[in-house]
Image (cartoon, rainbow over all chains, first blue to last red; front, side, top):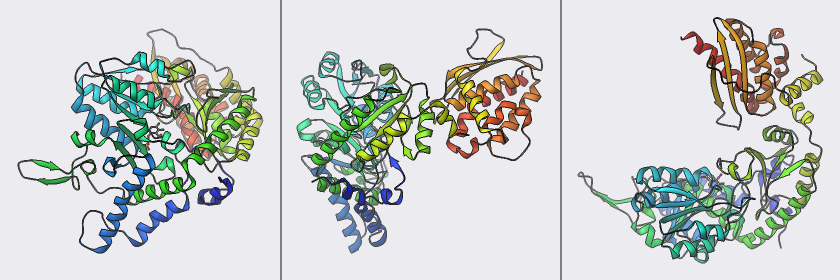
Length: 407
Length: 143
Ligand SMILES: Cc1ncc(COP(=O)(O)O)c(C=O)c1O
């Protein structure tokens, strides 16, 4: 049974700020007590480095740290723990793919197929890789309302495409892409598929074996874990052949003064430098927390909130609402005649926290025809009562009131 | 302090019907493009400086109420002024946005921003167009 009141009790931010309606979880999610405890436990009882040191606490910390791979493997149903690279977040994972795979496998004239939906972190690394290799970017055309369909993908796919780089869930429109079909089609052309899972992993059931994607990167902080930690999943046969991205301690087996380096095996060769140990332990606790509640329950609740929210939004006539068909609890809109940031300031004055701007997807606006929007994004701790309050404030919003909060 | 209703009216007026709005194609005008890195405001400002006088000001772009209204108000304020006078007003305005006490009568309608300092994340909106004007005036001394 999904009991949102019980869940809300797990989140100190909600207890400590009962006055705030937090509708910005797509930016970062609140953290439940077990995550906070995992981080504090490391600071209070186990502050040592991992993978070195001949004393008991170091073994213990290393074991707990390595256990994260098991939990994350289960969380996304990878084949093996060796497919779980522990990173600093989605951005670092996506850069590893663009560099360690892209630079060494793309050549002049090859194509990286992507879309206007991408977050900066999923497209700038590929721009750079293309600049260095002579490969080029192509975009799958979106439908009028911003969907990326199997048909359009199939039409855009061709022999020259070597990498398909797409998000799983759009952070602006909340649409889920048909990743499983995309992978099947891309593979039939011999291309590999790298997925930005930053928004999908917290809000959908992600099974990498079922999807058959080649890479999937995501962040801990959007799934109730600490920031600065994350996972890059990669099929082992690909990871195994790839070069490292960062070089340094912990990732090499040996090296000599001539500069010969023997790297460790994957995933360790991608993990040079002391990792974010406490963040990674917190991410493990977050994945366990979400699995205990059940991702299927979280997804069902998320869809229920989305449906409730979109019906209420559609009933407002002072609103431009861009994504009534979102697959996750994410509402993107503008108030007619009021600039997004002014509306956000007014909502903030009413203790409702949303995001205004272009949400790091600066090229999407070609598609939906608005340069800036407001985005209200929900997670498992949000309630229908909060949506009601939000709608009430939005219904009565005027330019005069928005200006009023600035005076 | 300026009356709240008056402030509200000034801001809405300049936001909905900005003065000196729309760019011109004329070689006498120098232009600055200000795009904020932290928000979406994206404003172009043009100044026609002849001798020591700011003859004309034009601007265009996407902006919130604060950035649009402040740019519009300042386009009125510095038009026809000597460069040093215009820069002095801009300096006064910066002090106003820092919340410093003082006499800001000269800033006329720009006094509507006298409490903006209390919204630190919006102060930059009030600066974007005015900073462009300042830079254009300063650059005019370099030639
Ligand atoms: C779709 C998407 N991709 C990538 C990222 C980048 O994630 P991070 O900043 O955690 O690396 C985000 C976060 O905003 C996102 O929404």
